[in-house]
Image 1: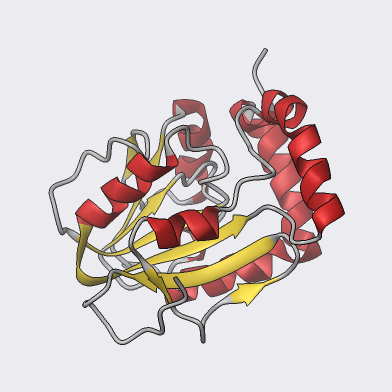
Image 2: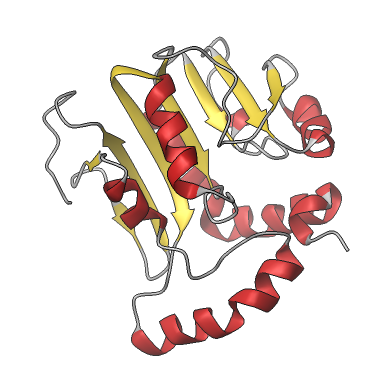
Length: 203
């Protein structure tokens, strides 16, 4: 059985509700942080793709061609590529920005995906992320562990107990403390590799 993330109309409907409840404002801020040329990894149905300025030099990437059909209708001017985060079909150091929005909860091999992002970023390039992460409250954290197997199956790969922000730090990125926004389970931040900027090190 396919999960929610593999059923475009159902996923898109759920995201439309969440966007109206506030996620859309987070997406708009995320898009405003990006410099071109930029790659959006896991663009899905294109809900963030449509928020970049015209001519921003965006490429959208997603492993599911059905999702990209919806993304094409939402952002017809954006080139779209079918590929996974763990195997980006681009040369080294070719993007100023890589954007990920609610993606790495579902990436099968997180370290490899982040390594690929490091590879395609130019020196001084930025990783801009909007992700949900493991809850900070101990009880909610344990509940997310308990719910994870069933939710991952239902959603089609999403892990509610994955701490993507910590994984980014382990991958060698430094997170900009000034640009970081967080709630109990949501994070939005910009990160660079050491030596490519003067961002505070939260690792």
